Each structure stands twice: as C-alpha cells, then as structure tokens.
Image 1: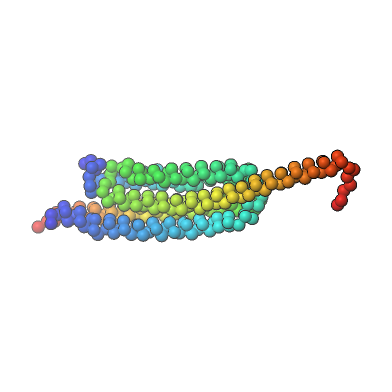
Image 2: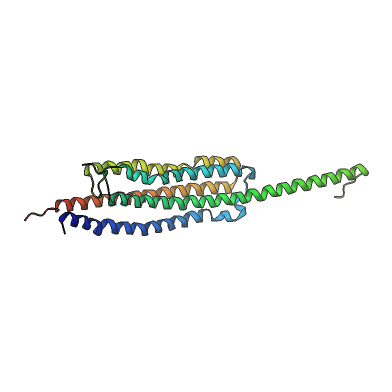
Length: 161
Length: 100
C-alpha cells in the first residue's frame, strides 16, 4: 500500500468516519432531548384553561407571528449546508464532519419549532370553539329577541324573574 | 493549492477563517433567529392578558434560551472536533515520509 493511500486510510478509518458515526448517534440523542423539554413547555396547551384571558379574535394574529418566527428559524437552518460548502479551505471528510454538526442543528431546531406548531394548532382549536359558541349564542339571542318582540307586541309583558 | 476540487486535505491557513465564518455567520444567524421572539411576544401581549399569557411568554423565552445554549454546545463540539482533525492531519503530514 502506497504511503498516500495509507495516509488517507488512516485518516478515514481512525478518526473521521468513527466520529461521523458517533455524531449520528449524538444527533438522535440531542433531538430527543429537545423534544423532551420543548414538549413539556407546551404540554399545558392540551388543557383548554391554558388560554384563559385570550381574546379569541386575536388568535389568527398570534398564530401568524408564531408562523413567521418558525419560518425564520427554518430558513436559516435549511441554508446551513451551504455555509459548510462555502469555504475552500476544507474538503472531503472535514466538510462532511461539519455538515454532520449542522445536521444536528437542523434536527434540534425542527424539534423545537414543531412543539410551537403543536401549540399553535391548540390555539386554533380554541379559536374555532369560541367562534362557534359566539355564532350559536348570537343566533340564540336573535331568536329569543324576536320571540320577545312578538310577545311584547301582542300583550303587556311583565318580568317573570 | 486550490482545495475546491480536492477529495481530502486542508489549508491550515484557511481553516481558522473557515471556523470564524462558521462561528460568526452560521451559528450566530441561527441563534439570532431563535432569540428573536419579540414579534410573537408583541402579538400575544396585544390579544392575551393575564397569568396564562405571562406563562406562555415565559415558556417561549425559556425555550429560546435553551435552544440557544444547545446551538452553542453543538458549535463548541464542532470547533473542538475540527481542531482535533487539524492536529491529526498535521501529525500525519509530518510523518508522511519517514526518514530511513
């Protein structure tokens, strides 16, 4: 085996490839960690009482702000591999090594923004429930009002309660 | 030497700049995006009052801080790893042709 070939084999075999394999395991662990704490931050969203004090008509505006926040993070995360390729100082396994770490960033940011999007969907359910209640209440009041008007027109009405 | 088309190798003089660009550009940009929660907070403040709103904003900020720390941890690991590989390449380079 030539010296150059031996050099490359040693480089790949002894360190870079082992490290890259290890990085894959580590990425998976990091993603699980983020999923754990990010999920617990918003677990309370599954309880409707979480939204006490919220003006439901503002839910679309809040969701838009969350979407923009998430989109900004995803745009940066999606472009990370381009950054790894930008340097001409490195090549081969070093670029691959860098990309593995940037892949880890993409994985953990995906887990993070996903937890926010779950919460955003809970807000939407809250919004729809209240919008439906508002509509029903409005219809009921209108019907009752019409009935009262009719009653009032036909007789002198006295309060019952 | 142009390393654009090289399959293996590293420019030692360019490596430091590469690391700085990663730190100042890549990692800073993702942290900035994560930490920029102000628009979400403003939207929440405009349409949501009380303890629940405060808790949500607290959780949002806590999450952003934790994510920022996570990114820094990944950044430190990468820079350490790149330095390690550089060091190893340097050692092997010195021993590439042994004296007889």
